[in-house]
Length: 543
View 1 (cartoon, rainbow, N blue to C red):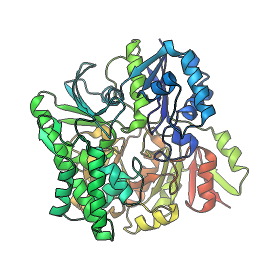
View 2: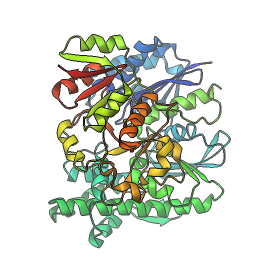
View 3: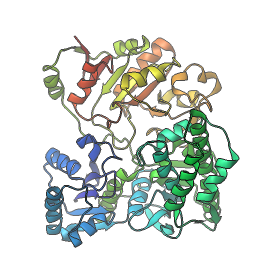
């Protein structure tokens, strides 16, 4: 029985995971603690998430039996006493000295290997499973990998080498900057915009010039980033990033080309390993929920699982799992029950902060919350441990009725957001396949990682959470035994409205990570971002 720390020191998405005796105790991204959104924090160490977990558990890094570190960025820092310029010298020196003293406990885990572990060993798949990773590159110089897995064992069978081939993820990374946004942070905005555009052969062929699938599991264009920047600069000079229609058409064709080229690759993979009917995926490419829907509906696989922390923050998660397997604590493939792996605050801590500001409270009454939502109020939920990964899943969520088409504009105004993404629904498990067409992969839908088509008779009833062009939504299926607070509120709203669906968006303002602590939640209440705050076992409102 052992204590395993997983640390990720890569370019962005720094995080820490602690597993004790085969049980995940904490998995926390630094951005939740620092309040600096990933995409703005490059080349930093996961000092804040590590210290938070150390403080909460009393288990210091020095107490660990095994320390797993993924991505050799830190190896470079430790071994050669050098570092990227953006790191604070004192912080990195202190951390470096700690790790040098602990070098005999350190196990290095590959970037894509950690991605693979993060998804397969949480998928619940017992039969033959294909494990696929894909992202914008790692310091082992890989864009992606393929693994064959069965009965808790994984074997790598393929790699997409950086420097020899190109990356789908880079098509999106470099596009963000042309839109005036930030790569590794705003790709989802482009995906949300895509449904409003139209096919344009010139644009579609421009993406072909950037990257092609050439067969035999090979992508062309080893100078992927440079070529993409060159072609995107040309498109910018031609005005393709000016005006709403041009920007939407660029997004549409980027999304379509991504789906087309990835499915060429995946059909080739499936033909090579036809007996592998389960698919587990991780890596930044699979943050694209529309691509995940296309894969899920392709018929190539019976079930698909997407790691809830599919991006680089999930790498500490995967590397810690590998460490736990190595010492014999993690037994076989588990089915991830929930992603609530962050911090939790007591009612005393919540009330203690509330006593310092001008709010009033009453005991939590699910029927009242359902009624407030039915009346059109914006309610925030601060409930239990916060989520690991990019999705708000009912621990730090904002809830609104889904019946008003204008909700998108109203909510974005209140949250001071300028987002393109459609809002997501959450749905009672008993009604999931009644409202949505959910033929398979229900487990991954608990983590809001895939789109599904809304059934025709429901689309007009819940317009605030349906994509207006293609009638899809990115639902979270909510089970009473897994998230009773979320489920009970939704159940009471359903009794009043006859609608077992509600809008769920992350509890944060523009440019802010999803909230962590009570003071951040109450700040939104006092500012008027939300009308009511459900925190712990009370309902709060401004006096």
